[in-house]
Length: 301
Image (cartoon, rainbow, N blue to C red; front, top):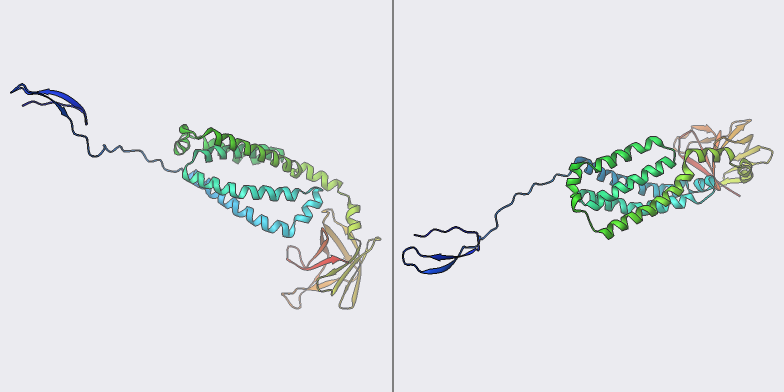
């Protein structure tokens, strides 16, 4: 009896020890390849948190996109003297799909998502410094450090990399967004805002305020005169007083000889003295009390 050893599919020449006959013998091919146990990489908790934060940030951006045009666009553009609000809207519109796509890439362990996140955090460090928010760089720097940890890089299979053309596209896009964000950051840092508040032409605001204003229903009239006197009319009754632009330039303080009061629409019998109005763009808002919704809106005649 002849015994031979070999590998699957290997062909060997064999000579029978009894009869001397020679022949070729082929070892059978294994029906199934041997099972190779691969170590499964678990997604780090920090990556899941980053992806969730991307989604939350997207939701907040959508809310801002809805609220800002309704209440703050005129004020923002008037204060900064440039259409910075439009720049912010464009930035939000660009970042919404990018943030969602990035969250998907982080969840799926795509190396391009880790690479993009690192670049985003680097750009955030730069713009945060320009806004003079030094403490704000701590979180981006920690995220960059976290994304370079060995177990995180193992999850994204960083050593395999990804296509060079995609990498260059990402770098180019980040540079464009960085230039865009630097431009807006220059106008919203505390130093610029402080100087803008100090040098804002109060006389211009006064000229815009002088005149007659009516509410939507036409039953309330406010008249602001150039000698800083004001007259309010409601239900045939007239109230006289004085006005002054507040240090916060969109506030106007009112002092009445006889208190000018308005009834709270949702609280019959409750009357509140109008001691301050908010003057934004071409609209005057009368607030019944601090922090309450504006129930009375007046437009210029």
